[in-house]
Image 1 (spheres, one colour):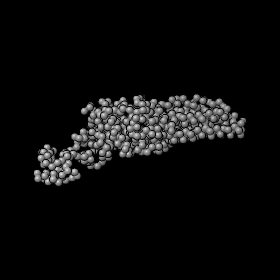
Image 2 (image 1 turned 180 degrees about the vertical axis):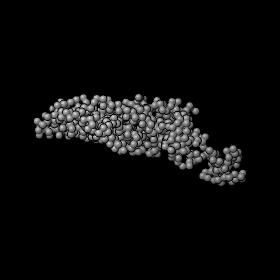
Image 3 (image 1 turned 135 degrees about the vertical axis):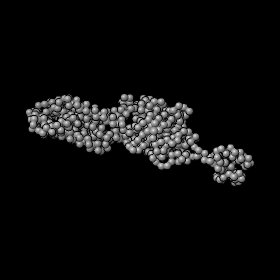
Image 4 (image 1 turned 135 degrees about the horizontal axis):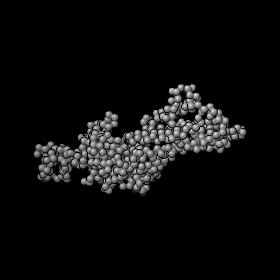
Length: 279
Length: 299
């Protein structure tokens, strides 16, 4: 696709000095710093407690979901504004009047927004993880997942909001996507509980709905997988919830599904963009 | 006349229930400065956008240099200046041009500076768009559009926001570019501007082309001949003796004369012995032509 690399660069240049992007990125940097402050406090007040894997478990439980919430907000705002703003400002038409295809334009711009979202996700997730790992000496269960899954999670969220923003107005698209993410998170929790309790103790309908939630929007398991990978392997809390039947790590096929789902939704968004009149 | 640089066949577009473009067929020859004229909503911008594939036509094709405009390569030498564009406020025209060069794969930064000089805006080349006035943005947008050697230019209301000096510079640049062989399609409501630079035009009304061709061929005679003379009173009384309807006007007279009778009218005036400096059949102004062909309100 000729011109895609140039359009990726153009997208990055446009966003690199855009306050809508730079201010949240700057604010995102604050979060790992705040986590660091929290950890400094824990280590100073009770060094023995800080050495316990259960403390790491608690800190992860407290801080990573918040990092995910902040990253979700950023992805929704950026993803919902990029293409609609390009179209309404006349820039999309300006670029497409050049010798580039709509696919190249879409791919270049979306890749640029994905790259920016990955930067923010990395700051929030990896910054928080790095702070926890630096201050609390413990052995993470699966560090590879902790590092890979936030990127899959970002891709799924961005794919959803990119598609929805091309179908409905911007603010409505943010509301819809946040609602989908919230419901998906809730259904993910329900699904975990349903898996933990014995067959028959949980309504089959609820079990089906919670499973369907994953297939409709598979971002939530990526977040759970990232947290599971970061959690201490030898925490007593971890052992307790495992003994209760809670699956600590979603199966690997869920990652593959999330990747395929994200690619398919990006493809749908590209198809929608190809049919959009840039009037 | 050169072969068609742009050939449009049966191009049509509907927005919901609104028929924005009736199936439209048009040839624009290479090297022409071609005006699209019509009231608001006549379909001029939709025509440009359909040709450039910014909107998806319901039917028909547009060939740029013989290549279907849906193929990106057909637009390699095409430049487009939209009526409204908000460039990223944080970028400068130089950076924007650099990005366009990467997409086009040809040209140099010097191309932009050359055009900026022509439009007296070299100091704006490295200024962020957010720090420019509306007219300054338009100047730099024009410089971006003309930079390099465009084969075909689509200019949608290019004079928007320009001061009189910049308009003169734009006219000069359009004429020069046409002499270099570029085909220029202009959509404008400023008939004076159009008259000054365009040799051909298409008049659009409710999405259809009602007339097109050389402007000189489209204008009609008004049925009046004009004689410029230092003695209008004497000339008028002389002509009235031949049962002609004569009106005195500034620096001469006008008489109701058909095109066929014009040679006899000239001979009559010459035989009067009254001095005169010129005699001509009066033609419609572009404004008259616009009202006759494209007037009657928006679509």
